[in-house]
Image (cartoon, rainbow, N blue to C red; front, side):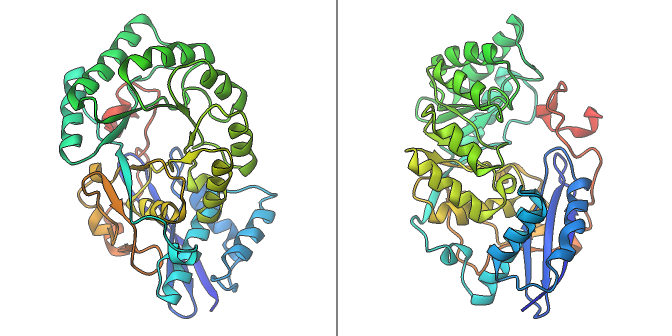
Length: 381
């Protein structure tokens, strides 16, 4: 079996254009991967086009050989283009053998995984609005939810902004009760001093974690914050190299990290990072803010990883047409996702339906513009 072609399909999800990598073989088996970016689309599409000639003619079942060749070609770094190709090759290998990818990785250690809801809080940024939305999430069966209550704040928060954030978190806590986990996202936005100040008052709301309060590639700042706040702090979604996770975990300031499979190079490297976490008595909570295809990829990783804390999921809060474009992905039931059973990744991409939702230049979250959380991207231009 040889790779005959590699191409991309872009689907215009309103707040993030999804990029799928399609790897075709001379035997008719097609693999799908994802290379979605939060703040860029066309550069990642171009990146796939630029490297595909390096692997055409290779056997897609030799996943590690292909990845290592691309890794060295990229001057010893990982890219989302490489991750998308890697995922597609795992998909092909699983399909060729008639087994799910997690079977190829040694077999599952769990039948399901608890998830937390994200993307649920689009709408008016008011305590009443957030409380109503949070109640709806819990009514769906979720036992954990995450949100960013900080609006368009950057570096510091005024007294007014602090009061607004506290009101939002307090309203959500009152709405969901004491049995539901609340996870607070900060999107790398604060200075070290501000993050420490916020982390200390977050304890009043019994939050499960405070995520990326400072630039999450600044290990020293992460460590400083984590040591000086009374709530768990996590990071990892913007780290790319394996050694970054090792360095962060070596300080023993957290017991959960959230690597992004697209950012670290795909499925295999995510599993390697989970091993590094286990060596430091820590767990993983894979970052997952892309499409339902990516959720299924995360499930294959979670299936074979003993030290999983929880799994992020946006899928209940996406556009209704998503199930026309993608089929085979699992839905959350009672706050859990079950492990895949179909060969490969287990998701089919309907390219004819995808054409109905083309790339859009406004399909981006502009995180530091007022109203970004409404996901009304047309008004953020």
